[in-house]
Image (cartoon, rainbow, N blue to C red; front, side):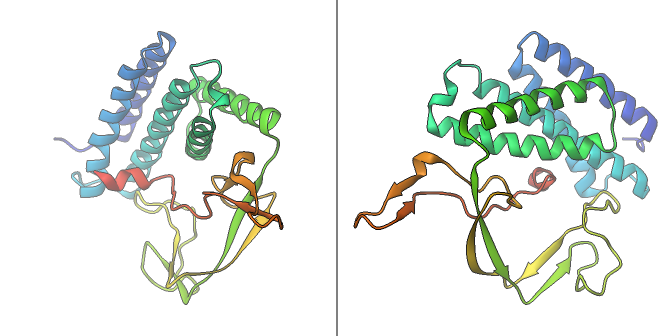
Length: 237
């Protein structure tokens, strides 16, 4: 394999996105999903193993477009799960759609900061429409938010204490997104909030039940913590 040229790579990715749109327009969801999967598989390997002698800029471009394609794959899943007109009447489906919607929204929002296209705008309009459907059907919602204590936070780029390193969380560095990893985290408390850090920890009406003794309520099988990150899929290849 020859070294990737960033311009040619972006043109190649753009052509694939056009092909993806054509497949989605024809409701060829499985083929559109295969297109995304193959792209993600091939270029995740390149990113993980540093198969080419790329500079930091080129690896950042690969990462951004990988996250975009994963967002498009999330969108396919949303389309498939909401095909039935009465999908919102099944509680399990509602919970699954909400999780994928959160994943898709975060990935597309991230990619749209770097990539501008009519196709991305169309996807954004659709996912915002689905968000409005949830709001109209289920309200703004309440969420569980854990308070966590930790010994310290380490930067994933340099592995130094976050207070001593020069990297900034959320920034791109040589094809990696900077974040701070907590050491020895412990849940100190769980709060009920209207504006959560992680909207996946939503409480649904069917999860709220009366206490057996008739005193107060209990919340059944609600999510209080997730490990989601917009680039987590890359490390699976």
